[in-house]
Image (cartoon, helix red, strand yellow):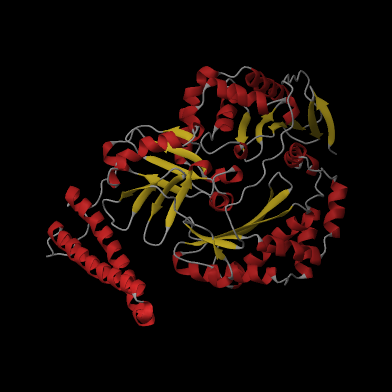
Length: 564
């Protein structure tokens, strides 16, 4: 049986367990509380708090999640006491002389860490804010000062923002947790980078993944299990298309939960897996959920509450509930809640999850045929400002203005507004990478644009200082160079482009002059206006068309003049 007490002002959950004692000191702070430009401070602080413990004969660890950071220990009673006392002592007196070493360790860890489908889904759903930061590197590590660490610890690592849990007979003797007073911080509000749902995007994974958001409730956890059963039945048992098929239910911390599902696929079976996956989602969305599946899932979940040490197993999740303000039901209450879940409740949850859904399809595929809207990968608008023509592609230009920066192509634009810029990575050679809160980025490589070196000083002045991230110098071989503009063989390159510009200029003068004369004639004598109107409109349209053709060729000429 679990009981709640208090140790040095910290809410403490205790449940009996066999074997070595386990304990966790959890704080309501994580990656989602950071910003993109200053990401990694919680992880760095966690490493510093564990440094002085050194090499020991027992197991301990720290974990920084999205909304919770936990220091965990398994060992003898005296080991647990020493560990928890040591963590609190370190939080009160951080080993700041170790900071640069731990920064390097974390940067190495980040470079070697593989991306997970959950991170890709989070980035596309939330953008470059809050819960979406799971999909980004910890870019702020190199920038943190001792004062930054001390301020973060004083804000979040306090007794009023902590929960202790202990799997053992009682609180170990000699335990002392003298943390400073503070306040309990609520979980961050969720952002959204999706204008409409359900939506899809093409990811780098060979398989298919999906997530949806729903209010946290027992029926939602049941639905996740039903979804897994349906996917396993369709994609593995019946068709043999996938090997790994799974779904899970994860509370977010703000009263909502995320239901995620994945299915792997061989390259030659990706289309079939995508089709089968979507069929299962469509089936559940229209309410085709069987009573037998709900009964099987709830029976399994109720059975999991019947083993003798279930209270100890629930300690980490109950600590999460306490930290995020969610009620902790007893085992008996959990059984009653699960038994009360109906098929209609699960169908309601299914509708909510699938209506909010985000589907990751294999590269080169889409899901618009199944009613999923394409998640925005480009911006709706480009900013106005000074153009920097590409030296390799006449159809591409960088535009930097008072409101932001855009990369503009023939049919699309990528825009980051300065007031919505979450990070600007700055290299000594002038490269600037701007990331907007919607996750869209603009990469400014000065060498690739005419007069591109002039863009960096303007961006440095326009972008807020708190989102700037200075990056180490690049090896010269890593700096891209513009590719020669492709000109059809035998056409003379620069000479041929000059000829085209002169010919187009003559055409513009011809059509423009005739259109102007006809316009003046209609103004003087409007008798033939109906007859001449079509010629006037057509003439002006042709004039504008050929004028833009001149502009494109001038961009080509600039590139050829420098690199042709």
